[in-house]
Each structure stands twice: as C-alpha cells, then as structure tokens.
Length: 390
Ligand code: GLA
Image (cartoon, rainbow, N blue to C red; front, side, top):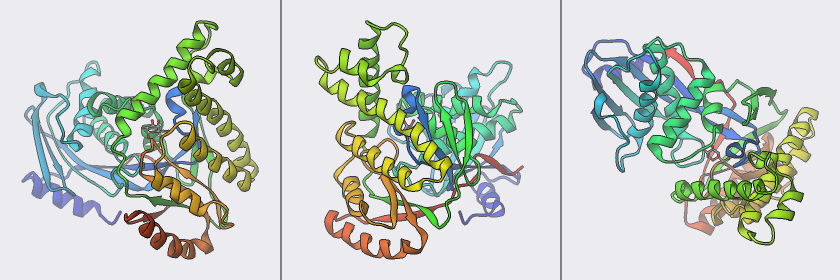
C-alpha cells in the first residue's frame, strides 16, 4: 500500500486532534490455494497473507470512550466501553468493536478507551478477508497497547470470535490465521483441528498468483455460509448415530456418507461429499506442491472449483464464467473461485510472461458478458500482522 507511517500519523493526529504518535499495525488480506470450506469441518487449508492490508493507527485514551475513524470512507463512530455491542447496519466499526470486546474476557486486564484510525487496500467483498485483516490488526494493536502479552494463536481465536459475535458470520479459523501468521513467500498448511501448521515455500518459478475480481459483492455470503455449516453439522449428527467417535467431517469417509446419508438426505450428502473430497484433495495437493508438480496441483484447483460450483453451490455465474474462460488455456496452471463464495475473486496460477495477454483478452470479454468491470491483482505473499510504528 502506498501509505507511509508518517502520513498515517498525520491523518491520525488530524482526525483526533492529537499530538500523539500512534501505534501503527498492519494486517494483511489472504489468498487460499486450495481447501475451501474445510476449516470449520476441522480439515486442512493452504492460505497465505498477501500484499494488501488493513492499517490501524491507535492510541489509548484517558476516558472510557472508543473513537473510530474509517479514513477511506470518511466516517466516524464513537461508543462508550460499557455500551459495547454489535451495531446495526454499519459494518466496519463492528470488526474493531468485536475485536476490542474480546479484551473484556482477558482476565486481569481492563479494556481502556482508545482512538483508532483505519485504512485498508484489501478490496471489500472480494473474498480476500478484508474483515479478518481489520480484526487481527485491532487485536494486535490492543494487545500491544494494553501489554496483555497474548500469544499469536490466541489472538487469532479472538479475532475469529469478533467475526462470530459482531459480524454474525460463523467463520472458520482460516482467514484470521492467515492474516496473523502469514510468512513471506510461504503458504501455511494448517490443520484446523489441532491448529498445527507448517510453512511450505511458495515461490513458483515464472508463475504468479493472479486474482480476478468479479465485482459481485458476496451479499448472500453470510446467511448461506451459516446454512452450509448447518448442513455439514447435520451430516455429522446423522453419522454419529451409527459411529459415535465421529466428531466432524474430518473423521468421515465417502463410504460412511454412502451408507448413512446418501439415501435419506440427498442435499446434505452432496454438501458433505464435497467437503470429504476437498479435505483429501488438499492433502494430495500439498504433496504436489512439495514435489513441484504444479500441473497436478492446478488440476486439483479446477476440481475444487467444480465441486464448489456443482456440489457445494457457493459459486455464481460470474465466477463460473471466469473459470470457464481460463480452463484449458496453457498459460493458466490452475484456477478456482476462492473464499466463502457467491462473488469475490478467482485465484489463478498464471505463467508470468503471459499475464498481460490473458488480461487483455479476459477483461473486455468479461465486461461484455456480464456488464460488470473485471478488476485484477497480482498478489505477492507477505508476512502476517506486524507493527509498522511503535
Ligand atoms: C470464509 C470464512 C473462512 C472459510 C472460507 C471458505 O472466508 O471466513 O473461515 O470458511 O470462507 O473456505
């Protein structure tokens, strides 16, 4: 992002009529190579933090008030600590307030009033986790200013709870984990059951991660997302009646689904079959990645898209259009829709030398087919949440 610490400092000082030098924390958006909707089923994911990020400039106040400013929207919001609760339609304060509220549960610490200025270049509603970026930045900033000394993985969980409690999306742990724990030029192979993780090098010779943004805002996303979670839970409850050791779809095999779910619950079967296959697909894809077999990895990305679109039903016609356009093109190694779904971006692994040509063809073709603009970003993989100025 083209904003310096000194520029942010002066925006902060102007916004809050202050001479203080604020703490500045940067927390990025994320991509996910493969493993979609697997996190809340205790499976695996393969995300990475990117070069688009939210920045929070913050300082503590003497009183019990929270004063917020969203620089990009030129909007302000104020609330007292003892009134802290999710607010109606205005969305952005919820991510900061939800994160702050988590500190009310940290024993031996008292949440204090604070001023915070937010700016971000993570596109909103693009499936790049703009909200997780804000939540992680806020938790990290407060942890620093309140000297609470909370470890990173616990901060990830606090940021996830902020999303549950203040945004009403019962998200898994992937987005916040990637934002907080990202490592430059590496993807994170995360086991969402144990939270064990390994960093897998991701510097593909001559290949770049290209994100194509449908510009369809994922408005259905939160309600449908929660419905998908329920459908997965239903599959687990049905199987548990026969096999009590099953805790999540992580423990389920295709044979169990065929035996206990397929006949009586066709929709639940379809959803959970996708998840069981996707959990396996990610593990196989990690082997491809370690072996440098990119064409095998790419094929799995296309298979993931097919499953998300036809079995899990979280795609939309614009996402499908983009995948159809690139599928079969030699310069696109793999592609699929990314994130929760119903809009947002596709992730494409594209040969670097051919990116310009691809964009030249796909941008006007998409606009002609959908009447929507196509935005694109070439993402680089960066570190997770970090202090920019203290
Ligand atoms: C959203 C959620 C994540 C994850 C993805 C789908 O981004 O926040 O937890 O479930 O959707 O993989």
